[in-house]
Length: 325
Image 1: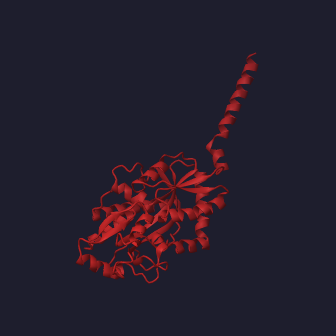
Image 2: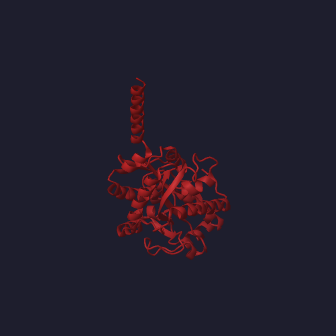
Image 3: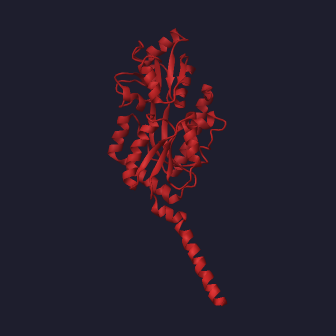
C-alpha cells in the first residue's frame, strides 16, 4: 500500500514538473514569438520616432514571422508611453522605441517621470540618429538662419516658434543662449506644429529633419543642427555655418525592452535588427526619411553610450535653464 502511494505521488510530481516546464521561460524563449509583438512609441503618429519605428516594425514582421505593430502612447513629453512600457510584462511581446527625449532628457527634466530610464529597460540596438531643422513659415521674409537671427534681434518680442517635442525645445533654448530671442508655442506633435507653420499662424518651426522633409517646397528650411550639411536637405547650411559656431544637437532612437526579458529573446531581437540595419534598402530608406545611419555598437558599448548621452543632455538642459512643461 505504501509502495502504491509512493508511486502515485511520484507520478503527480512528474506531472507538476512537466506542467511547470510548459510554462517556463525556456520554452517561451524557444517559441518566441508565438503571437503579435507591439512596439510602444511614446509620441503621436507622424513624429520622427513613429516614422522610423513603422519601417522597422514592417521589417521585423517578415523576419520574425509574426505581426509586429506600433502602438502610439503619447502624452507628458513621452512619459506616459515609456512608463507603460516599463510596467509591461517582460516576455518579449512589448518593446519600446526609446528616444533621447524619453531616455536622456526627461530624467533630467522631471522629478518623477514614472520610470527609471536606466534600471527599467534593456537596450537592444541604436537604430538611427535624428538631426533637427530650423525652418520658416512660407510668409516669413527670411531665407537663411542668418536672416532669422537678424529679424529676431530687430524684433526681440515678436517671433514665436512651433515646438512639438522636448528636443525641439532644447534647440530653442540653445538659440536663446546665443541672443536669438524666440518664444515657444508648444504642440502635441509634428503634424499640429507643421500645420500651424504652413498656415502662417506661427512663423518659425523647430522639428526633426524627418518631419520637415514631408513638406519641402512649402516650409522653408533654414538650417540643420548637425556638424556637417545633410544630403537629405540639399542646399541647407548648418547652424554653425551661419554665425553660431559649435552649435550642434542630434537626437536618436534605441529599440529597448522592459528589464527582465529573457536573454535568448533579446539576442534574437538584436540579431534580426542588426540584419535589418545592414540592408542597403534600410540605409536608403533612413536617408530618404531624413535620418542618419548610426554606427553599430555591442550591447555593452550601447549601455555605456546611453549613460554618456544622459549626462550630456542633462548638462545641456542645465546650461539652458530648461524647465519641464
